Image 1: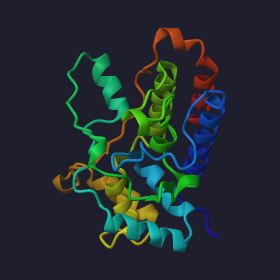
Image 2 (image 1 turned 60 degrees about the horizontal axis):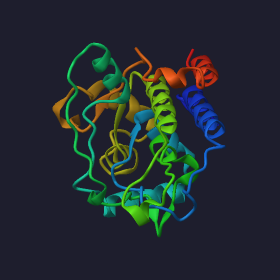
Image 3 (image 1 turned 120 degrees about the horizontal axis):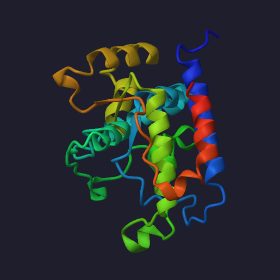
Image 4 (image 1 turned 45 degrees about the horizontal axis):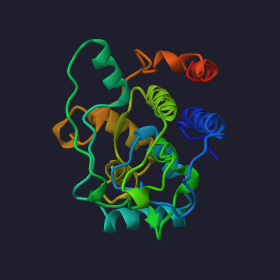
Length: 238
């Protein structure tokens, strides 16, 4: 089998996912199998994550996800105006950041199947980072510890940096490009390349261009705690 064009990036992405699991393994969370209150249609991911997810699915699973996205494509969904690294840069430069609208009541994730994730083994980081210390279904919201929010932000910055020449967007929008009949190309590889070239065009208003890391959004009290994780992530991204 010919290696995928983005094989190296996929391997780094898997290493980042594994490092995250190791970093948060001792955190006490109530989230468990079948808990899907946070699995809304507002999840975002990078184009590289979408490509990784697409190639990680077999033909049957890919067809099932395509059918689910086609049937449950959310008309009202969170479409990010800026990425995490854009936000960090704008704050560092003293610029205002755009207001964004995000409502969990807009609907559930198309990949959800009777409260279970149909793509769990290859799910994007936006899903992996959903952790709460209270049962969301009982309270109507999640409660996440400040250190976890900081850790999540650090990993989101690293994942975006890995795909710094790519895009980010809503799960349904991006996966439609890889799974739907309107895919820009027959192969995931060409889809990524074409999307990157067309990101500034009006028809792709729902996507946001990724950026490299210019500043890490880590509060001073967590810098020492996360110093080893930062070093490891830096070694991944060289």
